[in-house]
Image (cartoon, rainbow, N blue to C red; front, side):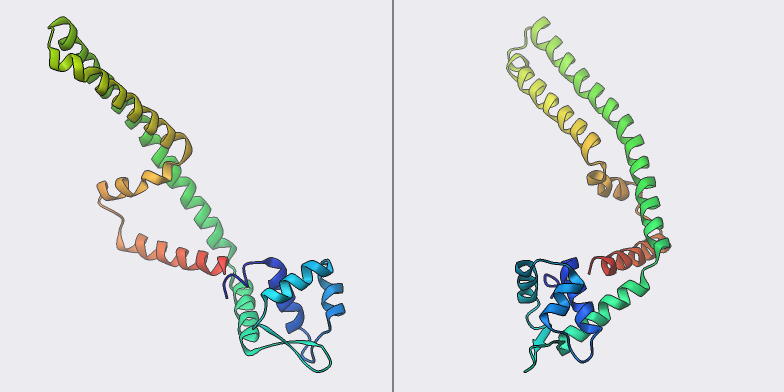
Length: 192
Protein backbone atom coordinates (compact mmCIF):
# COMPACT_ATOMS: atom_id res chain seq x y z
CA UNK A 1 0.00 0.00 0.00
CA UNK A 2 2.78 2.42 0.88
CA UNK A 3 4.59 1.70 -2.38
CA UNK A 4 1.40 2.32 -4.35
CA UNK A 5 0.84 5.64 -2.59
CA UNK A 6 4.45 6.78 -2.75
CA UNK A 7 3.99 8.38 -6.17
CA UNK A 8 2.40 11.83 -6.47
CA UNK A 9 0.90 10.77 -9.81
CA UNK A 10 -0.86 7.79 -8.21
CA UNK A 11 -2.13 9.94 -5.35
CA UNK A 12 -3.51 12.36 -7.91
CA UNK A 13 -5.17 9.55 -9.88
CA UNK A 14 -6.84 8.29 -6.71
CA UNK A 15 -8.11 11.79 -5.89
CA UNK A 16 -9.42 12.24 -9.44
CA UNK A 17 -11.26 8.91 -9.45
CA UNK A 18 -12.55 9.60 -5.94
CA UNK A 19 -14.01 12.94 -7.06
CA UNK A 20 -16.33 11.11 -9.52
CA UNK A 21 -18.80 8.98 -7.53
CA UNK A 22 -20.28 7.59 -10.76
CA UNK A 23 -16.82 6.66 -12.00
CA UNK A 24 -14.55 8.18 -14.63
CA UNK A 25 -13.33 6.74 -17.90
CA UNK A 26 -9.71 6.40 -19.04
CA UNK A 27 -9.86 9.53 -21.20
CA UNK A 28 -11.14 11.60 -18.27
CA UNK A 29 -8.23 10.49 -16.08
CA UNK A 30 -5.81 11.06 -18.95
CA UNK A 31 -7.13 14.59 -19.51
CA UNK A 32 -6.91 15.59 -15.87
CA UNK A 33 -3.50 14.08 -15.13
CA UNK A 34 -1.82 15.23 -18.36
CA UNK A 35 0.24 12.01 -18.30
CA UNK A 36 1.24 10.07 -21.39
CA UNK A 37 -0.83 6.96 -22.10
CA UNK A 38 2.10 4.67 -21.25
CA UNK A 39 2.72 6.44 -17.96
CA UNK A 40 -0.98 6.40 -17.07
CA UNK A 41 -1.22 2.69 -17.88
CA UNK A 42 1.76 2.02 -15.63
CA UNK A 43 0.25 3.93 -12.71
CA UNK A 44 -3.18 2.34 -13.18
CA UNK A 45 -1.47 -1.05 -13.03
CA UNK A 46 0.29 -0.07 -9.80
CA UNK A 47 -3.07 0.96 -8.32
CA UNK A 48 -4.51 -2.52 -8.74
CA UNK A 49 -6.65 -3.20 -5.69
CA UNK A 50 -7.37 0.50 -5.20
CA UNK A 51 -9.37 0.88 -8.42
CA UNK A 52 -11.93 -1.27 -10.23
CA UNK A 53 -13.56 -1.00 -13.66
CA UNK A 54 -17.26 -1.50 -14.25
CA UNK A 55 -19.08 -2.76 -17.38
CA UNK A 56 -18.96 0.72 -18.90
CA UNK A 57 -15.16 0.73 -18.43
CA UNK A 58 -15.31 3.46 -15.83
CA UNK A 59 -12.82 3.49 -12.99
CA UNK A 60 -14.13 3.58 -9.43
CA UNK A 61 -12.47 3.34 -6.05
CA UNK A 62 -12.55 0.03 -4.22
CA UNK A 63 -13.05 -0.05 -0.46
CA UNK A 64 -9.26 0.08 -0.05
CA UNK A 65 -9.10 2.97 -2.52
CA UNK A 66 -11.72 4.94 -0.56
CA UNK A 67 -9.74 4.40 2.64
CA UNK A 68 -6.53 5.49 0.92
CA UNK A 69 -8.15 8.69 -0.38
CA UNK A 70 -9.58 9.38 3.09
CA UNK A 71 -6.13 8.99 4.64
CA UNK A 72 -4.56 11.22 1.99
CA UNK A 73 -7.20 13.90 2.61
CA UNK A 74 -6.74 13.62 6.37
CA UNK A 75 -3.01 14.13 5.96
CA UNK A 76 -3.57 17.07 3.64
CA UNK A 77 -5.98 18.73 6.10
CA UNK A 78 -3.91 17.88 9.18
CA UNK A 79 -0.73 19.36 7.76
CA UNK A 80 0.58 21.83 10.27
CA UNK A 81 3.26 24.11 8.85
CA UNK A 82 4.22 25.06 12.39
CA UNK A 83 5.36 21.47 12.94
CA UNK A 84 7.63 21.65 9.90
CA UNK A 85 9.09 24.97 11.04
CA UNK A 86 9.66 23.59 14.54
CA UNK A 87 11.37 20.51 13.13
CA UNK A 88 13.64 22.56 10.91
CA UNK A 89 14.51 24.97 13.73
CA UNK A 90 15.22 22.17 16.20
CA UNK A 91 17.37 20.31 13.68
CA UNK A 92 19.33 23.48 12.84
CA UNK A 93 19.87 24.21 16.55
CA UNK A 94 20.98 20.64 17.19
CA UNK A 95 23.40 20.69 14.25
CA UNK A 96 24.86 24.00 15.40
CA UNK A 97 25.37 22.58 18.92
CA UNK A 98 27.00 19.44 17.54
CA UNK A 99 29.29 21.32 15.15
CA UNK A 100 30.55 23.67 17.87
CA UNK A 101 31.48 20.77 20.13
CA UNK A 102 32.87 18.75 17.26
CA UNK A 103 35.23 21.56 16.30
CA UNK A 104 36.66 21.69 19.82
CA UNK A 105 36.70 17.89 20.14
CA UNK A 106 38.38 17.49 16.76
CA UNK A 107 41.26 19.81 17.67
CA UNK A 108 41.71 18.33 21.14
CA UNK A 109 41.64 14.74 19.87
CA UNK A 110 44.02 15.59 17.03
CA UNK A 111 46.43 17.26 19.43
CA UNK A 112 46.32 14.28 21.81
CA UNK A 113 46.86 11.73 19.04
CA UNK A 114 49.69 13.72 17.49
CA UNK A 115 51.23 14.33 20.93
CA UNK A 116 51.20 10.61 21.74
CA UNK A 117 52.71 9.85 18.33
CA UNK A 118 55.42 12.43 18.98
CA UNK A 119 56.22 11.00 22.42
CA UNK A 120 56.35 7.48 21.01
CA UNK A 121 58.68 8.67 18.28
CA UNK A 122 60.90 10.37 20.82
CA UNK A 123 61.21 7.25 22.99
CA UNK A 124 61.56 4.99 19.96
CA UNK A 125 64.34 6.84 18.20
CA UNK A 126 66.09 8.93 20.85
CA UNK A 127 65.96 6.32 23.61
CA UNK A 128 66.40 3.50 21.06
CA UNK A 129 63.46 1.39 22.21
CA UNK A 130 62.99 -1.36 19.56
CA UNK A 131 59.38 -2.18 20.52
CA UNK A 132 58.28 1.44 20.21
CA UNK A 133 60.33 1.80 17.01
CA UNK A 134 58.23 -0.96 15.45
CA UNK A 135 54.93 0.24 16.90
CA UNK A 136 55.27 4.02 16.28
CA UNK A 137 54.58 3.89 12.51
CA UNK A 138 51.51 1.71 13.14
CA UNK A 139 50.28 4.12 15.82
CA UNK A 140 50.97 7.06 13.51
CA UNK A 141 48.95 5.45 10.70
CA UNK A 142 46.08 4.65 13.07
CA UNK A 143 46.14 8.20 14.42
CA UNK A 144 46.09 9.65 10.92
CA UNK A 145 43.14 7.40 10.05
CA UNK A 146 41.22 8.43 13.16
CA UNK A 147 41.91 12.12 12.49
CA UNK A 148 40.77 11.67 8.86
CA UNK A 149 37.53 9.93 9.92
CA UNK A 150 36.80 12.55 12.58
CA UNK A 151 37.31 15.31 10.02
CA UNK A 152 35.07 13.52 7.53
CA UNK A 153 32.31 13.04 10.11
CA UNK A 154 32.61 16.64 11.17
CA UNK A 155 32.20 17.91 7.61
CA UNK A 156 29.69 15.45 6.15
CA UNK A 157 27.31 14.14 8.78
CA UNK A 158 27.56 15.63 12.26
CA UNK A 159 24.17 14.16 13.27
CA UNK A 160 25.69 10.69 13.05
CA UNK A 161 27.45 11.25 16.35
CA UNK A 162 24.44 12.74 18.10
CA UNK A 163 23.61 9.57 20.02
CA UNK A 164 26.86 9.47 22.07
CA UNK A 165 26.49 13.16 22.90
CA UNK A 166 22.92 12.73 24.09
CA UNK A 167 23.98 9.70 26.15
CA UNK A 168 26.86 11.61 27.73
CA UNK A 169 24.73 14.64 28.47
CA UNK A 170 22.24 12.53 30.41
CA UNK A 171 19.63 12.46 27.67
CA UNK A 172 16.75 14.84 27.48
CA UNK A 173 13.87 15.61 29.76
CA UNK A 174 10.60 13.67 29.58
CA UNK A 175 8.84 16.74 28.15
CA UNK A 176 11.44 17.05 25.37
CA UNK A 177 11.17 13.33 24.56
CA UNK A 178 7.38 13.60 24.47
CA UNK A 179 7.59 16.60 22.14
CA UNK A 180 10.10 14.76 19.92
CA UNK A 181 7.71 11.77 19.71
CA UNK A 182 4.87 14.11 18.73
CA UNK A 183 7.00 15.76 16.05
CA UNK A 184 8.15 12.37 14.78
CA UNK A 185 4.53 11.27 14.50
CA UNK A 186 3.74 14.40 12.49
CA UNK A 187 6.72 13.64 10.21
CA UNK A 188 5.54 10.09 9.64
CA UNK A 189 2.12 11.40 8.70
CA UNK A 190 3.69 13.68 6.10
CA UNK A 191 5.61 10.84 4.46
CA UNK A 192 2.59 8.58 3.83
